[in-house]
Image (cartoon, rainbow, N blue to C red):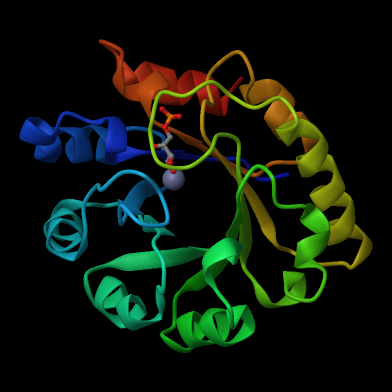
Length: 216
Ligand code: DX5
Ligand code: ZN
């Protein structure tokens, strides 16, 4: 199974953001994970469209945009135009999820859906064939540096079975508290993409940490 690493720049040093993007460019990471928070759906505010636009001017890797925002629909086109290669919306924020997913796909980019830790995998039953990727939160979204929630492993296995039994190619991404201690088990449970913030950036050698997580 293909394995990908997506460093979350929420954990980077914003005064040196350009350097951190160049580090990711040089590393074996596949994507750049970009966390957008609105202070309404999640209890924190991060960054938005203008910063994404500047990052995409120097990024050599596709940018994976994780929208932790209420009412994401009006922002799909602006984020696409600012450089998003994938847009992930939360199932908990989208009343018309099928419409939102298809609208993202109409923009010619990947469309993905995210589940909070308490949201069951079964809630994907009618949408799984429409999405390119499912993002399973392994922490409650809003902050970096939180401890990994152990029940994520069984959610991954359940989702892997759902995807494989239907002959789909949907990717499984995991986000929150991912590090060298749980990375192997996450890949073995059926995850394809590991998002990691503090584990990668709180290190003197983030390139090495990306390499080690990929080859865990
Ligand atoms: C949490 C964000 C994550 C976060 C992960 O709300 O969606 O992407 O940056 O950070 P760590 O790896 O530090 O848990
Ligand atoms: Zn995220």
